[in-house]
Image (tube, rainbow, N blue to C red):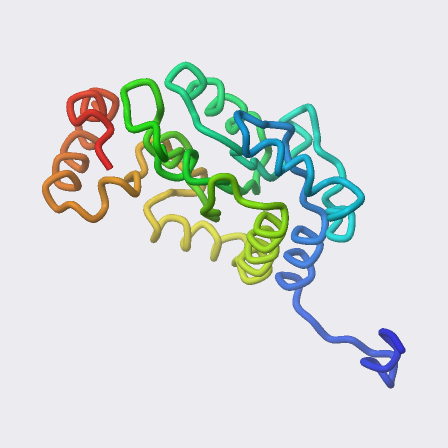
Length: 211
């Protein structure tokens, strides 16, 4: 039993896009970036009991220049936000972000001025994982869903067009509309006007990072 049964004639046909995406999803290297209690669950998922090495993810890189997945595990304070963005910018393309836990995704119970009300205010997020904190099994499930998303991503010019259509551009930009503004017509109109004038940060302060 094995690959030979799937390839009785020893021939496999595929596309470069599928082969590249398969290799990318099979060798994601997360950045070592734990912020709060969710980081304990993230560390547990890399232990022998849950064994992220099954998915080629056993190497948590200390350098962002050698990582292509940022798992934001925990709440993001206003002081940590520029550091998080700097680490994200240092990661090579293509790169992905997984928001782990309710605090990273929406601020959670910390609905105050000190905590960013959703990490998508700082970086574009590819996968949201609910829970407080989510168990390692949930993190692995989110990673597998991210694998599926990576497997079907376009490459080259098609990737650029897909990102541009989503409003992110070739490199996800800081001015991308945060999720907390998307479903309120007034906030979204205000955000679009502020982004056109280059005063996104001022608009965030004026609205108090409302969810």
